[in-house]
Amino acid sequence: MKLTKKGSRYYLVKRVPDRFASIEPRKQVWISLRTDSKREAERRAVEALSDLENQWIAKLNGTYGNTERYHNLIEISEARGLPYLPVVSQSFIGVE
Image (cartoon, rainbow, N blue to C red):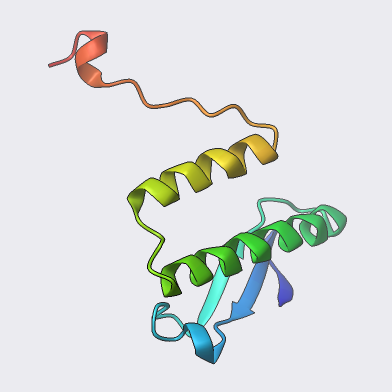
């Protein structure tokens, strides 16, 4: 794992381990940490790396489908103190 600053933002750069090559087509993964603070980037990188590795493991086990992704995103948003707000269908707001 490596932190890289591109412009004013930090990124987590992770080489894809050989054991995940069958489910991850990229050789290297870049994840924006959405901060210009090195201290905050270091904190966020730990969470982002854990999330990434959990996704890879779930994909290897065949347990990472749309439902799991949906629940994973809700858990991530709540863990970061952000309320999950579902998208309102356009038909509910008068647009057909």
